[in-house]
Image (spheres, helix red, strand yellow):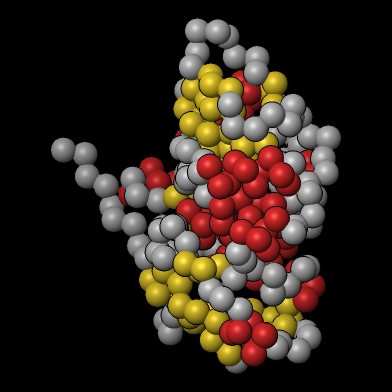
Length: 253
């Protein structure tokens, strides 16, 4: 029998300027990246420079963030929380109506479907913690030169926040990046991609109807079921060229 280790998850409290926002189930690595990504994705910051300091206390299960500007806790707590369908019962402060008001993604980024399938395979082969445990989600960005960066977590939305945080900290330009994820592309996942400005998002599994509708509205390409020579192209923004032979199972919506 081939035994794998168990993936870890821990309750970690996020505090901004002394105020607790929520408690999250997270895997204890790349927590600083997650903090940058979550704060950006949820609209607490617009740029990495707005953060004065981040102190990660793994023993206490707390992340303390100091913002350079005043933090209006009443405004935040007055907003309705939306609990997501993701692992670890994620929470977002954005409703679907909010996401529709995001700026539409403007990018000339194009790629071939065969390239996405190749990079999806490379992503899988280099997902260390998934290989070790068989129970971890991952998110990956592909840069213009073909290089990839991977972040993993017990929660698919957490993994995406981690990779967005990495990109934000390193001032990567989203219009030239591609986002790949192992998890289902639901509306909250699509909102994270849209907020940062990814023009293309691909997944090894499905996208929800609501996510596809938002993607079309916000000018984002969504490709699901990226496996082997399989793929489902949900959108028709002409950023992804289907160059895979007719014998493969490529479905165009």
